[in-house]
Amino acid sequence: QFQPSLCLTEISPLAQTLAAAMAAATSPAVAFSGATAAAMPKPARHPLPRHQPVSRRALPARVVRCCAASPAATSAAPPATALRPWGPSEPRKGADILVEALERCGIVDVFAYPGGASMEIHQALTRSPVITNHLFRHEQGEAFAASGVPRRMIGTDAFQETPIVEVTRSITKHNYLVLDVEDIPRVIQEAFFLASSGRPGPVLVDIPKDIQQQMAVPVWDTPMSLPGYIARLPKPPSTESLEQVLRLVGESRRPILYVGGGCAASGEELRRFVELTGIPVTTTLMGLGNFPSDDPLSLRMLGMHGTVYANYAVDKADLLLAFGVRFDDRVTGKIEAFASRSKIVHIDIDPAEIGKNKQPHVSICADVKLALQGLNDLLNGSKAQQGLDFGPWHKELDQQKREFPLGFKTFGEAIPPQYAIQVLDELTKGEAIIATGVGQHQMWAAQYYTYKRPRQWLSSSGLGAMGFGLPAAAGAAVANPGVTVVDIDGDGSFLMNIQELALIRIENLPVKVMILNNQHLGMVVQWEDRFYKANRAHTYLGNPENESEIYPDFVTIAKGFNVPAVRVTKKSEVTAAIKKMLETPGPYLLDIIVPHQEHVLPMIPSGGAFKDMIMEGDGRTS
Image 1 (tube, one colour):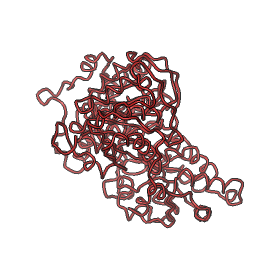
Image 2: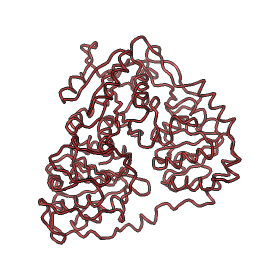
Image 3: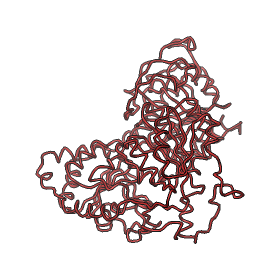
Image 4: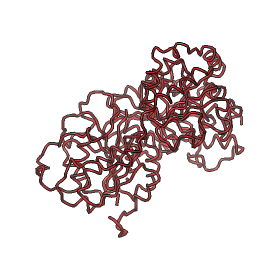
């Protein structure tokens, strides 16, 4: 569910999507200029013949757990093969040193797209006895699958040359330009350590083609050289600061936990903290699954399209415990009105996030996991824990849940998109990994599916990267064999990376694509309805010459990729169609035609506050 990932890619074709893929990363990532490859450490497995498709491997189902690359975590040297005749002290190309360095970091899967500047790396990959490449059909797809990204010859305006280090400096955690082939082992080791320590984030390593071609004898035990970075890593939280947080909890009567993506590695500790305190929990879009959304103390998502009761709780709370969050505008709306009655405790590993948008009363710059462990240790069996009683607050919020549940209207046999997601949730028992594109379908997937564990929800979230859903789902299927993976997508987002149907078919990945097809850019249409008098400005995606037909025909296109596909247009057909989709081995596409007049509700307008929440209306009435 969580692993550092690597993306190797040629730069010029990918420069336009680099920022999207980097910012959309849901796990630490290391990006290598030169080839599109996302590499993921996994448990060891037997080497496979290079010709054997991934789809035909007999792999047991397993959960991939969090791992951080570090000097102590590197594995032994990979075995010599006929394709690698050199001994430990014999020279080999820089590209081979790179690939062997990846193997020593535990990498077994990469997402890579070849080109002239990256051929050396791809040639070296074919000599690897353990690494398998997954060939997506667009560099963008490779990047989204890895949730990370990026290539270059230096300074001559050569073919596909882009100053990628400079281009990506503001959207990566760190950059390397390798000018000496002997630096590759150290740089790879440092890159994975940087990507997975502190606040996880993308690291780019630019390896020019001439460096890939140089011969050298690698020195694998070269120590890392990151004294400044290591010195700046947050220290464990002090007992005094944690006791201060618990004093505020003890004094409060209406506390709320506001949990974000920064708690993705702290799910167990978070659940224990809630058990000990009884504090209700609301999550951001990035935080879905970090606390089970079917728990009685869950208020589900807050913010622009969050539940009424979650936003009510934040508005009425007297203490806001903000753990692993950044107070972004889609959550806060009008910032001065957000949690205006609350004392605020902000815990985050990144000092840049503390006080950036909302000034806290108490701040702790530390790993949330360590902070929660410390809080739980202080609470266990303590008088402070025994004195906590938020029963009246629970009853107040339960009343809000009864009065303002999530809901939708039905219109004959027209298929409400929310209903389709509810059916999927029931048939999968809330256990599937869900990926999405961007738009209304993304918000409905957040609202109506049940998320029980971290990393179960894959979305570009704040970046809004359309086309993210299908390649992200494919990456999840590679990393989690045996787990159901569903791309809930819109017709606009799906079309942006439709070519990745080829990858999921060729590798026989069990990715189920469920398109909520309204023939429009639905979220933009909703804003047109609400704020622009329903004036349509380039938001219709169908064929203007024949609006009665479904265009494009995703079912026919999918069959061209040899992916089974079905279209449904009636509500009575939905349950059987989704059941068939889930039961069909391998990839599957289900095209569900939904009305474009449907709106995502509730909705707090941009820059608005809780009092401005919209709870009724749609394109039929607005």
